[in-house]
Image 1 (spheres, one colour):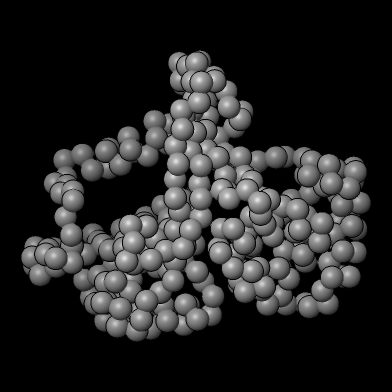
Image 2: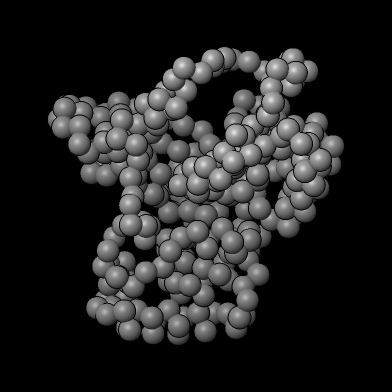
Length: 276
């Protein structure tokens, strides 16, 4: 509602809903949107789509919104309240001491080998394991038998700025197309209980630049591109994976799905019954 008020001066949910209904009815007559643009306009109207969604999304995915599936925008909730929290979940947050601390606890007492290439020693690792939990690209696991799946990547640029408070929040998104990065992360604001960090006279920030992914470069795959072409190809790999009795696929790359962190953790907990 704060956004709707700033945009249109709408002071009540009914007024905001009326504007969105009017704009979406004018712009698209489609009951079942076929792409992200149609879905976004149906959800929030043309004004908000043009100002807050279109530029950011096309930077992020490197293609027009008309070529992206409607499912991508469905992750984002539309609420007619003055609650500015990003999600509607009852409990929201990150691990108190960060994900490194969480993972160190999970791995305590477990042998952990780093800087190993599973594919270069696949026969060895398969021979010592009852189950393989694979979180890398599923097409790589099957040696690109059905061709390569498409991903988007990111480039990070970090900077130490000589100010106690650079932007006042952990993440600030930039929706304009003429700004090459999609967001700036100010890391100290992820841990608002760490007053010593908040009081430091400097701050660490990171710029995130979306970019294409190439197997032949140094980029990492971050986001699956879930259009029909890629989803059909992924399903072939998924069917192949079902024949592997000792294989468990997990995460965005192996399941070729745009997971949020809480969804990843839930899926991992569900998989534990298979590991035993």
